[in-house]
Image (cartoon, rainbow, N blue to C red; front, top):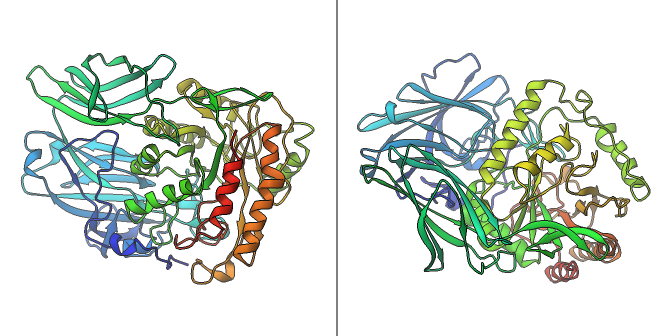
Length: 589
């Protein structure tokens, strides 16, 4: 069944230039060109080496399966998806090198400009780019992209995508699903930078990656006032006196301008921002807890899968993304767990500026676990967790369907890509490499390696079950069964999924006959009362037993799942808002 339920933003999205905003707010250049809009597309057999004719038009960056793409067609595992678009460079690109950027293409793609191959990429969630300068010509240029995506017929990291949606497996996303854009740069230019705040030393470390050579200059602003200005090295700690600290209650961002001037006096200028904040673990009321800015801070969050009834994994507009974040913050939540999906840069930017902590999941992959390993055994362990910590070792690669080494290598490469892509966003407070045992392997080692690469954030090495006693959290999921605290082992205890209370609202569901939830309620009143009792009788009392964070399921309904705070079309808040706010006020240290 294809998507038929529209959001209020659908009309705005169905235009010649959807999602026109600058796609990389942390590193802004003036010379750029958005290529979103109508492309030619074709679906061919997997043996097609060159596409000679096209089937019609597709609206990029919406996946072929979504209704906003204008196609609403599944891509088979034995098929290829082709895109073609012509473009002309603006005058300001003259004399510069040109970079072609893709926000994400799912899953394997090859890219051609004017018939010449410029590169390929594997992995469906993170951005990549190619220098296409040497393939360009005056006037009109042609871009062609070839995509292969086997979805659940393959082994790749694909999250909850399925060739046939059912239960909590959702409609696939194939091809381009984030913004495509061009950028003009000098011969010597700033490729990127890594920003690491240190509130204890009152400094921000900036490590700059340069293509070529030149002199760097940094100017940092508090509003319109420059609080630092001077030349810096490629790896420098810049003092920020009496820093204003970032938190959900006060999400202050410092703006900056970074300039690279080469020997010919040509200057590459980028604009960005950073925040001064610290995530750590400390003792409070006899238990280790999660701290923010050296103070105990209860993180009350929601599972956020980031699916849209009309756009699939692509939000119809920038404003739609903002709505979800702002509405959850209005309800009193201060954290979102981005579940098995990597969003576009702008989603994290809005979390940065609006003040929403993000727990970022890695995208799961491999074959699904069988019912015993995915359901029965974990619940037995969960039932016994207040008495003893039981676990199952995750180096039995075949049991977890990660037996081929190339699958494991690809997972770790994409994990590194994700962390590198998102590292500079101050809102990200926790990395989650594995969820509920699906595709899990060597979680303790991988968690420890993440912590070594990024000691500034918390790591939930195994969310849900199959805990390997790794850093930093004891993380449990609990649906239907009562919430109980596990045996304390020195790590902060977090309830990283729970609730899932559900209601079907006619006219606002994907498929009424197949809708499901963990516990179903017939009215707003009964749903709200169940939510209140769950928190007052189980979750809030658990804070005295070491509970440090909670993640309720979930922000919105998703396809057949009807357990959202919001309906799938984002039209209705299903629970009484004042009750939700009241419970969140009580979830505070």
